[in-house]
Length: 211
Image 1 (tube, rainbow, N blue to C red):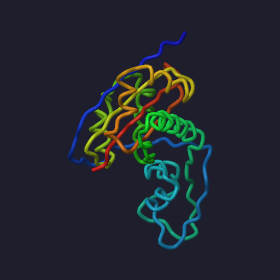
Image 2 (cartoon, rainbow, N blue to C red):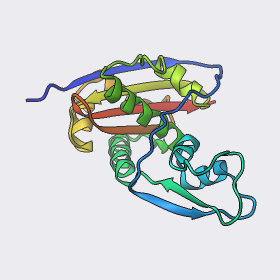
Image 3 (cartoon, rainbow, N blue to C red):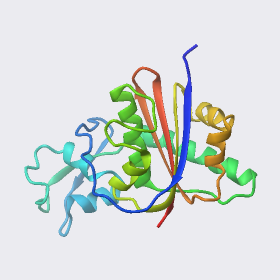
């Protein structure tokens, strides 16, 4: 049976740092073609689709200068439909557990989910399993580096579980992970999933209370 591994970490943090370099690859399939309108920028398009600016830039090598796009230009937008659907399943399962205990639901923060997704991808691509990333540092440093401000944060990670339900079962059966999931200290969540690598499936939950 494939080995399954889990870890949990929680802490308080403050301060703000600049954004990190983002992975340059984008998914060629599962995309939308957006026609630029007057007043658009790539940042506006990224916000509209709730996708990272760097992902849009990577998907559009024909745009020589990302600061300049013009009405009528065609922009390829990676949608990540399948990955996001899996991530939303985890969020729904989290809120089911919270509701059963009379806790308020956590709001899905798409920007935090993007950070969590990068963490799962980083663990897969760099073949490690740890809260401390060789690329981004601690989860707290990583969240701040992506421009997200918070007063409290926590991270759950897992690897090897094949489905959202399976990984939630594993987390809920672990006191440390369960404590993060059911904590009243956090109001927002981001979940990141990445397939492949040594364990086949990598999962990250990030929890925050925004500043």
